[in-house]
Length: 330
Image 1 (cartoon, rainbow, N blue to C red):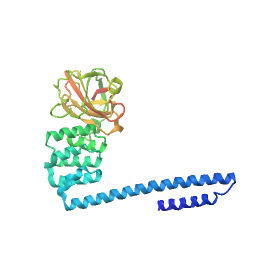
Image 2: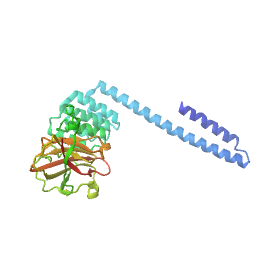
Image 3: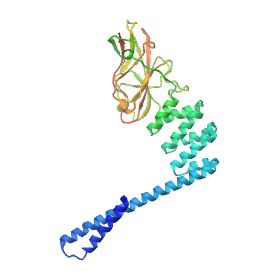
């Protein structure tokens, strides 16, 4: 309908311009030029719209033919993975997964580098379904979680590859606690003694590295202060890790102990003395939102403690850029 209307308008403007072409009046000549400009604009729009429709029809026809061929000869699916059309590659990969299961692992891994988001999602789901126990698959998913440009693909890969899970229940949210919660003491973790390391492959948490471990040798980690890492010489978006040692006083009378972050840009996963405490991962919107995690069982009174924070920054500044506290609650 829209293209038909444009054709009729173009004809009308052209006819009006031709009828007034012999006029010597300056006003009429200017009007004719204006009409011709409108005609040319609409004519070009028609050409562009026609080309787009033709391309869409070609894509639909090509996909229909490919689907019919694959329905007749599903064993040819792998040959369609080289198609220029992303939807054809996705459907071919879907058929391969249904036919071959775990035997097609190498194909799924290769397809994780496809430039089409839906192809990568299909490959990722196949890896999750058939090959999750394989260490090379876990390493690949960690890399995808850190580097994939699609938030959807990265998040699904992160959830699939992530081995740490913990339900966080703060004292103030405990339905069995019906008293007022007060912070009776607050210790700031030093803001200038952090150690820092980039994790572009997203593998620091894997069993091969265990950067969260209490006894990790972090002598080769770089010193860093609280603040955005870009302002300290790291022009980088992605995953990075922080470690810091601090000493707690002798045990105090309390009902809970929490580690309180004023802000981490933008997502954070936290360990204390090698034990996973939980995460703050709500995407880019969480970059300036305070959060707390319970650590009453993990804290070590009267001795050294080690906090480890894995940080994901996807854009602009990143890092632990506001103070971190240990809060004693009653």
